[in-house]
Image (cartoon, rainbow, N blue to C red; front, top):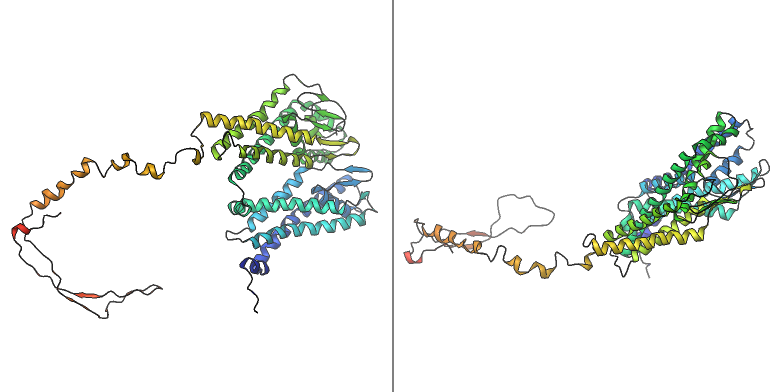
Length: 484
C-alpha cells in the first residue's frame, strides 16, 4: 500500500533552500557575534586599564556572556545575582530584530519554527562553550562554575521571548489566529503593554527627578574611582543598572516599596542602611518620608483609569463583563513582576536587592483593575457611543434600517422623480420625422471570421453572424411610437 504524501507544512519543514539557510545562519550568528565582540572589547579594556594580567581573560569573557544573560555568578565567596538589565535588554532587542527581518509575508508554521530554532541555537551553543571555559578557568580566576541547568534556562528563555516578540511584530494577526485568542484577550494584551510602558515611563521620570534633587551626593560616589578610567567605569556601571532601578521605582509608585539589603524606601517610610557606592544610587532617598509622598499613588490610579477609557474605545467590555480590563491588569501585573524578578537579586554583603514580589503583584493588579473598571464604567455611562462595541448599539447598516420609509422616499417615490415622465411625453410628442420600423429578415450562417483576435488562455467562442437587411415601412399615424 503506498504511503500517503506528506502535508505541505511537513514537506516545507524538511526542505530548506540555500537562501533560507543563509537567513537562518544570520539569525543564529549575528546577535551572538555582536554580543561576543562587545564583551571581549569591554573585558580587554577593563583588564588593560586596571593593570591586570591577561591570564584570566577567557574566564572573564565567559563570565561576561553568562552575566549579560542574567545567569547568577559566584566570584570567590561573593554571590552576584543582581545583574544589569541594560545589556540583557539590548541582546533581546538585537535577537528580536533579526527574527523580525527573517519573517517573510508568506511564512508558514515550518518557517517560523526554523526561525525560533535558529534564534535559540546560536546562543545556546555559545553558552555551552562558556560553561566549559568557566569550568577550566576556575583554577586560574576566582570564578565558580554556574549551575548548568540555570544557565541554559536563562539563555533559552530570553531568546525565546526575543524570537516570539520579533515574529509577533511582523505576523501579529497570523499569530493571534494561530493562538485562537478571544477578542477580549487580544484587547487586554495591547492594553497591558500600554499600561506597562506608562508605569515604566512615570517611574523613569520620578527617578530622574530624585537624581537631580540629590545631585550634590554624586561627588561622594566618585571619590574612590581613582583615575579617569575608574570614573568612566562607574558611569557605565550606573547606566547598565539604570533599568534595574527603574523597576524598583515602579514598586515605589504602586506603594509596595523596594529594599536594598536592610534598607528600604517607599512612599510611606524610609529605612536607612548601607547602599552600593554607585553614582546612580544617589537617587535613593535616605531621609524620612515626606508627608506629600503618598500623593504619588495617584499616578498608578490615573494610569488605571486611562487604561479603562482606552479599553472602552477598543474592546467590547461592558460594565457587567469587563473581561478585557481584568485581563489587561493581570497581564501587566504578571509581566512587571517578572521584570522585578530579573531586576533583583543578591549582591554580596549588601544582601538582597529588589521588590517584595507578592505585595507588588497584588498592588499592581489592584491599581490597574479597580481604577480601570471605574474608567470603563465612566466611558460606558457618559461617553456613549464613543468607542461603543457594535453589539451594544444599532448597526448603521442594519437591514431593517436600510429599507425604512425615509430611504424609500428619498429618490424613487418623490414627486421630482415622477415629473421626469414629462421628458418622454413632451420631447417625443413633437417629433415630425419619418416613422421607421426595423425588421430583421435573415438567416443564421456559419462562417469563419476573417478578423484575427487576440485570445486569452481560455478559448472564446466565435459568435454567429446574422445576415440581415433593414426594411423601411410606412406606418399609420395612429400607430406612431410615442417613446414610452
